[in-house]
Image 1 (cartoon, helix red, strand yellow):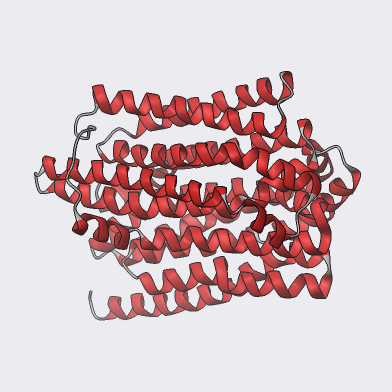
Image 2 (cartoon, helix red, strand yellow; image 1 turned 180 degrees about the vertical axis):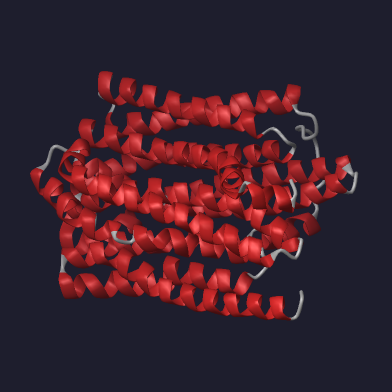
Length: 446
């Protein structure tokens, strides 16, 4: 890779780097959507609502897993870069063990928190019953999922991303097949869907473990001596990922709290169904961000700041086009889509009425996200953090608690577009300042 190659074929390079990431992220989202489809059609709207109430718990697992694993992968990579393979393996082993220990501890704690959490949210009846049925099994699955993700990061780190993509594809396919068998054919309900996730995760763990035990070129399982320095450095290095996931979890908890108390299970179900579209689109954005970031970093490090900014603008154009395409496609399909998951007219009407309002956020969210990726890739954490906190927590929480009180159920759908639009103003301010700095650097010959 060199600057002239990027300059000549910018679009090709962006898609070359982005496409594998988009596929992996989309498959991850697809598993969630597939579980929602089977939950809605074989369990009912209360099942979807129950699963959504527990999503903040899942974000906690993801946050802890990313915090430990991202920091560990970075330290292991630096050790390998310095030629110390033994140190890299020690970091790998401690990171995986720490991830497993933390996620297992979370499962033990939450096993005793079901009833207080449901009581605080105001969930009862079938929603509460399905919540316990589903998450009692998921407390076994989620630690396996987090460890699998950690193993996948190290496998990518040793230069074999295609293998982990194959595992992700196989996991998604097996999960869907088992959902159909356990929830559909065997009528095992919410527990069957959770069991499908557990079996798929264990199968993936077996495949990953076989690779690391027999075929890996660098990392392998074995004994290690716990290092406090590795532990602390890893946690600090991955702290931003933890904050990002926890911001999402807090926002989701706030959504559930407001919707459950004001609009009941039907409102939570409708919000979850609309949220599937947002989740899939956000995975596309993350894929573009992960693909463009190394290109931006390379050009910025080569003092080609205008080229780095051009990559950011081009990528913003792609995510804007993707957002517009999703908006118009789903606007036309919203009535069909509203009845796809749950055969309930009230939920279908809520989805149909709210989806178009909610999806207005797609015209802003991609640009906000890619700009945040851009500032991170160029080593400027402050503007990236301000954009992320604004759209992921501060402004969003204000909108979640304020708008439904003013506009009813329409306020729930308005929270996302208002948040992204306000954040767009902040993003624009940072980009204006960035443009000024680039012009000054050009005048000064830098």
